[in-house]
Image (cartoon, rainbow, N blue to C red):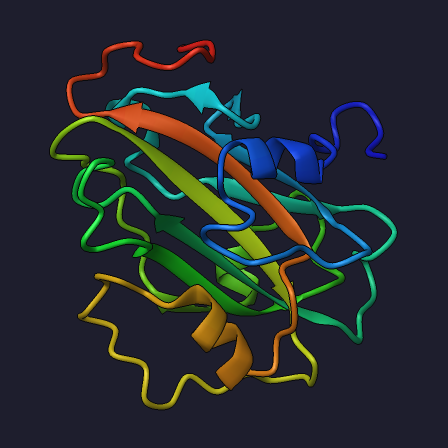
Length: 195
């Protein structure tokens, strides 16, 4: 459980209800890290509807919980859109919006994960062409120190296979997850609260 102001506790039920588990990943690990994702001062909570304009710059990300904090541990963070290009025809399922590897577990809340880790794929803000899209942050613990991104096609963001990437880099199951929604025309089409 997170302390006040230190992120929203991840619940498997929220991610299952949103069809992120299974869907984007088949399961979550047993020890979860609470992610805190902020676009400026706006904190993301599962299911929150955000306007595209609010999400065009890299968010600030914090890691909290008993599994976070060790100077010897490193993490991988990614952000995908499982509804690309359309929720009814997601032929580019899991479009990769961001990938940061080698994030030290000792990252302080005041520091940027993308500056301390290695930004493997630069952040690209949401631009859904139609319908309501889920934007999913997933956190993985790296099994061994420095992760090498050899062979990663940084230009092809379409249909990123999250589980194949995790397997190829020996990441294991996701240990953190969080999502928000955005629509093509910034309408409120979700039961969540839009800000």
